[in-house]
Amino acid sequence: MDLAYIPSPSTGVIHLGPIPLRGYAFCIIIGVFVAVWLGSRRWVARGGLPGTVADIAVWAVPFGLVGGRLYHVITTYEPYFGKNGDWVDAFKIWEGGLGIWGAIALGAVGAWIGCRRRGIPLPAYADAVAPGIALAQAIGRWGNWFNQELYGRATDLPWALKIDGDPGSGRVAGTYHPTFLYESLWCIGVALLVIWADRRFKLGHGRAFALYVAAYTVGRGWIEYMRIDEAHHILGVRLNVWTSIVVFLAAVSYMIVSANRRPGREAVVEPAAEAARAEAEREKEQSVPEKAKESVPETEPESVPESGAAASDAADGPGESAPSEDGDAAAASGESGTDPTTGASTRTEQDGDGAPAPAEGAGPGSEAGSGKKR
Image 1 (tube, rainbow, N blue to C red):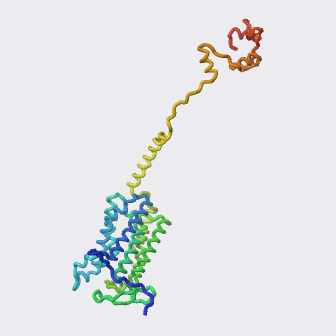
Image 2 (image 1 turned 60 degrees about the vertical axis):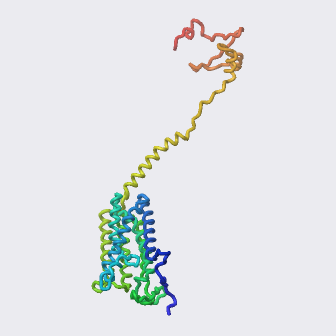
Image 3 (image 1 turned 180 degrees about the horizontal axis):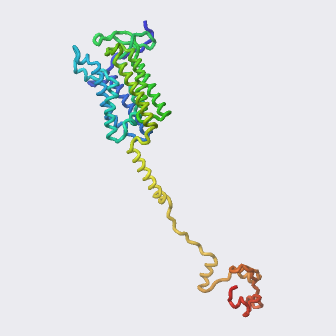
């Protein structure tokens, strides 16, 4: 008797009146939102506009869903076009069956269309959304848990997944390896690896996306090897294992060639963002002088109060001035002063009548009296 295991949900759908709410669909939707959110943050950090990732996702997500379903139907066509198959079931995407290889391939076509319309390079966009795609896969894998599908070999480990029997689908009750959980945890590790490597090595020109692809295929290879669901085999190996090997080699080769041809990271990822920033800087520079003018208050010239002497002059009338006390004291005491023109010291003396006495040598015959300059 197993004492520890991961239980499976009794049902993968909840009905809200006539509307079915399916766990598989919720996992896909939540994964898309997380991918867009993280991709937007990384895109803005690289110099892009905030809404660009969401706008391009409008193209990429529908293409990705169609591509994922096409890959599944083509590689597992028996339930739809084989004996006793029903081709209508090929459109029942909510029942599960999305191939990540087709989703990434056709999703890239949709992203290319969106990038072309925005005038930005596809590799730069792919680098920004790569970790978000890995997290979207990690969340989306829990849809397999709701549908009780894509589990591994039988096991009695404490983290084994309990599967309920279903004769209609050929499911046998028991405990199995939770391969959905293995892949979910692996994808979280891939996302963290890409974020770290991108910060450490400044990956650009699609190399961050290539690292995501290479790291994911390594995990998908050994997890795929554990699965027991129906699949096509080539030389005794499951088709998805061969696909992982081929895609891994292609991703590593791209990283090597791209690093040699275009090292470093793109200086400009979105020309429209650069133009918007330049316009904002121009408007800011133009607004600074205007704000400075507005901040300086307009002041009226202050009136200078009249001095006591000026007021006295105004009282005495025009042409009359009151002698200053300092002038009277200087005249009475005969203090010496300095000639402002020559800088020579002068002394004023008064005669008995109070008139100033002429200085020595200042008679009519002297040079000072003649007005000549020396």
